[in-house]
Length: 158
Image 1: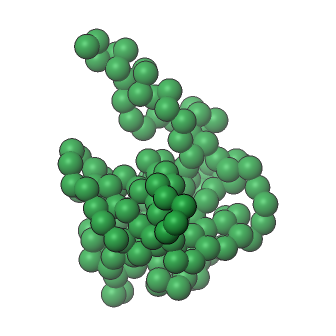
Image 2: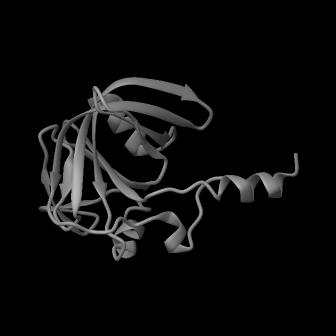
């Protein structure tokens, strides 16, 4: 298999961009992710790929919960703020205001929607773990077109 063709082909898979958050004790973690999909209607299940060597992976593994914060199409700058290490200053995470959700995971107040999950299973293969979460809480702040990877010019995968 030609590695360049493989990379280009896999990058043609469509992805949204999200801020994944979690909290374990006093430890907060957050990061921009794009490997996420709904996996079941009943119960409502989500599967999300998280890099094994990340702080976010460690926090989700410890807490067993996470929140998915959905970015609007005009929020690329917020997505880029979560490419770096998580920082908390007062009521802001990586510079953006948040509140704790039902699971304790940070809910970003400036984003249009969120949902929270409890981890019910995981698959540990390759360099990412697939966490399967049952949706236990959800909210919409405002209607918005979601941010998708293709519109940013960024690539993750391949």
